[in-house]
Length: 580
Image (cartoon, rainbow, N blue to C red; front, side, top):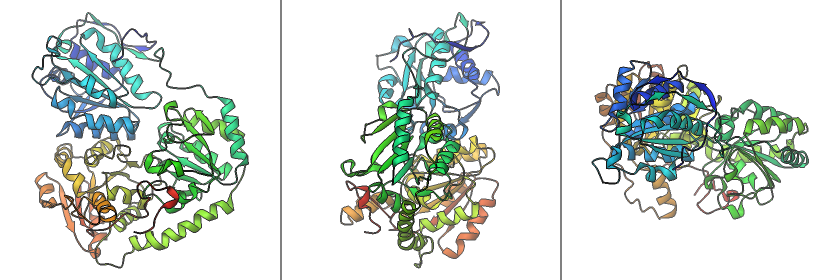
């Protein structure tokens, strides 16, 4: 746990106020940070904060989810779409521990959150009091910073630090655990000062121009370069800078799952998605490139496959704001520790105008192979059963790439990433590094609340949907018009696929005996419909998309459909297979 002996520099300050309660200090601190929305679930230890929230009228809106995990996933999506930190309230004990999955998800996916948990009174700490849990110990591995507040006077300074840490540099979740006596006691005076810097914490590294020039020299001399675009581009708001850089250099661009909307999918130099279930060409060509330019991505194992056989012919330029990611998985030739936007701005002035037509044609030839063997048969299947890919493809065509797409985790997630054409930044919300089933529905809640002008479409499987199905009540309660496409194959599809391919079709515990989803949705007050035939698809999708309220469309798809291409576990990316 960090100490408060560090000084903070005043950025803006609220007037001093005397003799306000700790819980009032919490609400006033949030307002001082510009927070106007929180997600949460009340309980005993956090109750004073809810009382202060109530007494402050409608200055901060509260979204009551039906589970704390729903609250934190909603806050994650809200943060990604709004650009503001997501804020979450939960009580002590089980309320707080229900946030742990979301904290871990936010940590690995670089999402700024400030989570505020109530705690038993300070004199009971360590005595196994009712609903006492050591949240500082539990949350330490899955937060960017955490702190336990035991005195009301600490609240403004700690909150200011929390928001600065959560949002600066590589974003991440922060947890503040506040004892009940700190919430109920009064402060002698309350002054809020926003943090501008913290000694010893340097979230924005100074760009090294020597490294920039070394990188530019490698780029100018490359014959087969490839850009790997990650989420860091979106976090830094560098989409235009990336496009400028690409248009000048002529280098093909491949994207990670989170990097998909950092670069237009219709751009002639976009060559597809990287990874285990990504596109064929960028995976194969990774091992033929002589230069890899990785921007705002961390060489996750789902992207690299066997690291001993990864980018075997390439020198690597790695641009990342987090120095700990450099050389962690893949050895780099030139490391640029920097915000992606600043690095691209500097590089663009030093690189030469170029094109790599012959190299790009190699991608196009492999893409043609994937189109013929995988993509076209999936979106225009000859069999009777509906396929996930054709459903996603039709949604993409009907919506013209305008909505925000949210997914849960599994086969449908990969199908959405592969077959939906993303045309705008911040158009996909999903659980990447942690792969959290149950993420989708509450994330769709948060995404739609943050998005006032764009529709939100959720693709979800029958497994993940049932993990947080109670959040249908949140949709109904707040009249949030999310459009849900439930791709139901009556299996835990991705696990079943692995069982089929690597465990001789021993489908252990992956068959789903599902309830009537339409009746459940109707019980929550939502419009709903189920289809099983291809002839019903377009009319059902049109009806769903035209609805001005939340809508659940259940689509029965083939039971044993698989996601291909695929890099088998432990294989090199160049060993990607198009079929079993």
